[in-house]
Image 1: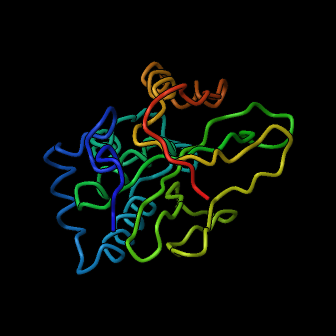
Image 2: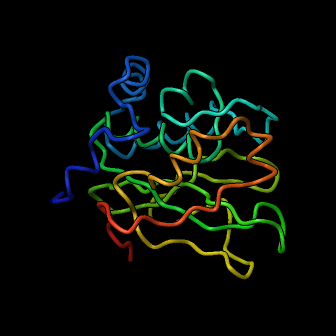
Length: 202
């Protein structure tokens, strides 16, 4: 039985799930089961919202509704939209993060955002809707985690928690970005918050 904190289905900063267009899209993606709905939401965000760097888009989106309106976003904005769609459909979900090098070993670190969602039949499942390309193929495979980026370089890590709200520092710094070009020069390497609702994934 689901006894998760209610924050995992609530609106919060950057997850404006009550926005009319976000709500409309969420309703259109609803299916017969939570798993089927989650898969439709995941695949829609993965495939329909262009990853800013992959598609050379310079607009900055942060809120779920911004990513939807612009049709583009970094992994952070795409995770905000995916969580908004899932929560609107009653599927508990939250935010997971990795610390990764932006390109190769020795390049600056960045905070990569992904999503964990909770399904009755399997519990928490991390998934990454950042968008597929030649070197990244992420599918919806509950029970078999399929992330975009392995942790390979010194200093990289996959944080074991799922947070109910996005990291405040990360959201603040995203809102301050003038462009994606600026992000590529100085990527955001944020720190986890000292407080907030979070669960540790096994």
